Length: 187
Length: 198
Image (cartoon, rainbow over all chains, first blue to last red; front, side, top):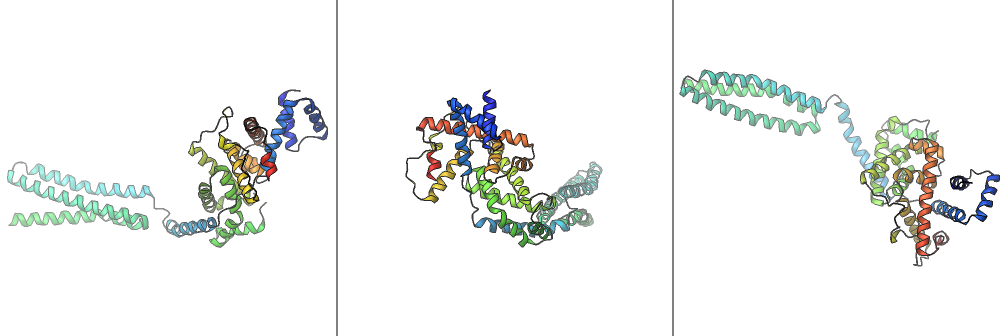
């Protein structure tokens, strides 16, 4: 009998899957095979050791901690359910729309600079106003984006609505600057 | 087939009744914690893993098939989670060719009269042996010896074949027997002392 077959019989015996005839055969073999008997003895010891191993009980605080975490998760869930369509992707799309809305202002500023090139005084004035306009625009956009990011956690819809207002804010800003420009020219 | 009471708890939880899920937690917390402890070998991590298992179960209740035993389903989540943790831990398993460190010795010269202490001691020593098995072998051993699952049930939990489980368990027993054999050779033949102590 091969050692693999012998070992398989030992394992089957431990699993209680060995027929009475095979069990007798194994006993007969092990009577003369000291190495095999020692191997079987160690396997039996492993079996006994594992069968007698104690169960670990969960700490008392475990259930309370789990339920507290679930209550927290459940509290956050309804909000997510009321805004299922709001995703990070939509937030990015809103930001791209704001960028597109700002493009006409960039074109306008370029047009003014090109037309003022023949008059040094006018060019200086245009450069000054365009620089001021863009600095203010950058500040306004930074503030609005920061507010939108903060709002996004609690109310994504409001955050996107705020971003959607950005073109209007920028337009009002340009009108204000142009208005100042007109007053300057008049003065 | 799940116990009708447990099925009702699952349905009530899905309807938003958190008290029903609390019943589930109280009923199965020991089973989940014991599995996590035997897999991870450390109480703090076992507690953390148990929390994760129940949170995952809670958020995936809609996927639970009532035709399947709830405990089996829960222990499947626990097994997979523990195996993931062990893999992330990048543990280096002690080769069967290397000598067992002194701390893994099963024999003890210290007299330990109190039964509780003996049980703890035995549990710790069994744990040190378990820690030497690869995660897939370890979970099969734990489900077999701590939960009395059949090969077919373990195969169901581990989503593999019955023959694969049988092979893993037989291989695990041989590895552990070799460890015990080595320990016996090192400390004089006192292997049985641990069993006799209990």
